[in-house]
Amino acid sequence: MKKNTKEQEKKKPLNYERMGHNPLKLFMPGYIIKGNENERVYHRYLQFVKYKQVDVLYLMLLVVLCAIGLATMFSASYASSINVTRDHIGYYYAQRQAAFFIAGFAGIFVLQFIDYHVTRNVLINGLILGAGLALMVAVLVAGRADPEQAAIAGDDAGGATRWLYIFGIRFQPSELMKMSLIFALSRILSVNADKIGSKATYAEEFTVWFKCMALIGITAVLMYKQPHLSGMVIICLIGVCMMYVAGIRLPFMLVTVLGGGIGGIAIMLAKYAEGGYVYKRIEGWLHTWDPANADIAWQTRNSLIAIGSGGLWGLGFRNSRQKFLYLPEPHNDFIFSVICEELGIVTGIIIIILFVMLTIRGAWTALNALDRYGMLLSAGISLHFIIQVMLNVAVVSNAMPNTGISLPFFSYGGSAVLIQFLEAGMVLNISRQYFERQGIEQQKSAELIPVDRRKK
Image 1 (cartoon, rainbow, N blue to C red):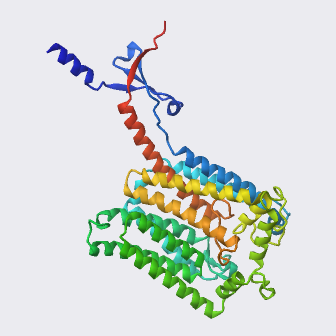
Image 2 (image 1 turned 30 degrees about the vertical axis):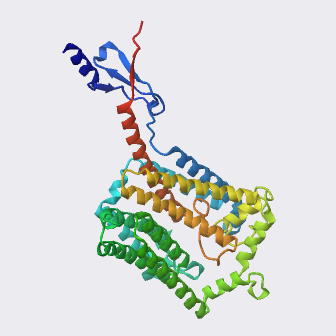
Image 3 (image 1 turned 135 degrees about the horizontal axis):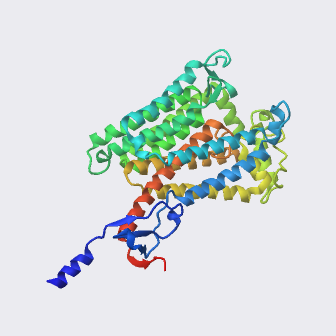
């Protein structure tokens, strides 16, 4: 009996008390105090406790992309900065972009103290979606009012009303709407998880599918009215991919893809028949080097010249020729062309690989998320990044008609950059909770050995 009692006592979990705060504890094997603290006898974990705060690899990829983006921004925007500033300052755009990056990383830091499940709350989620929709409507209602005369006014730069001035601050509502849609779809698809898949009836799944399609459709219509066709395409692609990831069954996905494809083609044909800017963009794409399309295809031509001039290894950092007012928007939508001209196609491929790695790591976070909402949120954000990268590269290489699509973390822009940082911060927040759970589980299962650390 005594022997059994001793064995039971050994199996009983001991009441351990953690050591005081140690700033290096996240990087060291853990120590805990056993029993009476006056005995000064510690128990050390036999195995290393991987108690990480965030996904370090994802954060490192983000930092590398931002570092390359800021350096190339300084070079690509040099001529444009001199041209637009009164004192001919060559680092105007790069300086502002650096400020956006600092604000973005500060936002990521703050987000780590907030549980991402807060955004799943119906009120918070509704506020995020409502803010996105309200600003999308506001940019249409405000129209082309003078920002100096009105508190809220639209901006018709580039022939489309896509920007909004709110008390003098320029903002692009479509960027917020992309994030708002990801949050809203993540909640709808996670809350109704039991109504999706083979275990649910077709009527139940149709209800969920209809909610998602209605939300995507409303957003697409608002984008179309601006008009912002590239944003509409991105929104639709994100929505369809998220429904597929959530497990919407094949019949509904076929209806979605076929309906969306037919609708998109119909819109493009209607716009083409009107003979407006869509007609010109398509003509410039189909007949890029036709002398009659010299003005229409000016951006595309100079983009191809820049990529071709750089060759495999490039002309050298800051040695681009096309950025000297030949290539419009060299620091924005066509920054990838300048990168290929200065640093070569090889560097361009490396940047694409880095984005693919960032997406894969985001997918890994989605697969290891604590719940379905976190999984869908991480997947949606990762899809947003890679879809926008693929479309931007397709435009600058003339694989598709020219349309305004920025390169995440590279193209200049305050609203786009800050929203992208917030999205990346949410992915890191999801990964942080996964690593914390892993750390707790490892602490519980770790083998302990006594270590005498008393002063002799």
